Amino acid sequence: MSKKNIITLKKIASDLELSISTVSRALNNHSDISDETKELVKAYAAKVKYAPNLFAKGFRSHKTNIIGVIIPNIEHPFTATLLRGIISSAELNGYKVIICESFNSDQKQAELLETMIQFGVDGVLLSLTKKTKNVDEILEMMKHIPLILFDRISNKVPCTQIIIDDEDAAFQAVEHLINTGKKRIAIIKETDSSNVSERRFQGYLRALRKHKIEIDESIILSSEDLSIEEGKRQTTILLSLQNKPDGIFTIIDEAGIGAIKELKKNKIKIPEEIAVVGFSNTILASIIKPKLSSIDQPGNRIGEIAVKYLIDEINNENTVNHKTIEIKTNLIVRKSSFNPLKNSK
Image (cartoon, rainbow, N blue to C red; front, side):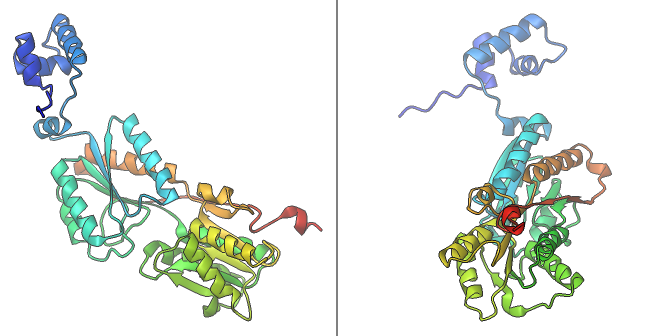
């Protein structure tokens, strides 16, 4: 098989009998190149479908206009909204995006940070793995290029961080259940190694304490990896209790979907007997029956703001003021936690 004919600046220059520097300047609208030459070069480049090598260009200019993004789980519905915000905002600002998945592995995360430097990206947006404790690789990378943390963050990393107020959002969700008359509210969360889960758990506890509701360890359930199946399994445990809960708060929607499925399987009336509230307001929340009440986690907005701050740092490296940006959320109330028709009877 013959090698593909890659169109380079050198080939265009040879075909047009011009110097490589003249071709490069013409393609970049340099003022010392005549309009006639610019039109000639651009027309020929379009004809042969020339595509500039961004990495080579970045090597010369020390800027590639490429942003690296590292996320723990690309399959999560919330991640899709984050990436949509990142990609659209990056493109509006003239940047391309390289997206990599760490699979919630610290080792993979460290390898990807090194890869981003090798690719010559101008900056990195990073959402940490669930159990990130050693941040040495992150601190080392920050010596070379700007970094912004988003969603899953760490106070060990001195950089700008974009998050929602997880504790307050969870507080809203649980207080909503309390205001609908629920007094025995379970939580399905991740293991304590998860920073996000812990913040949401603190919001759950604060709501119970504010309303003087006893904290019962038997209805505080944790799992390493939450999913629809895990939500079903944890709900089975709750239904096996002699004193069952009358409300369930799950720190991600998937677990809430699983809870609803298991309650329906056991012919439990939702929300009359047991109400359910999730977190993230993914597309799944509006598909399940009854529809799942959920904290609206604005992924698009988080992605857009993360890109804005990263580009600011790329362009103003010497005058960076690191800060934590908290994006406000709100609770979307649906029939899994409040049915106005039935409640009015």
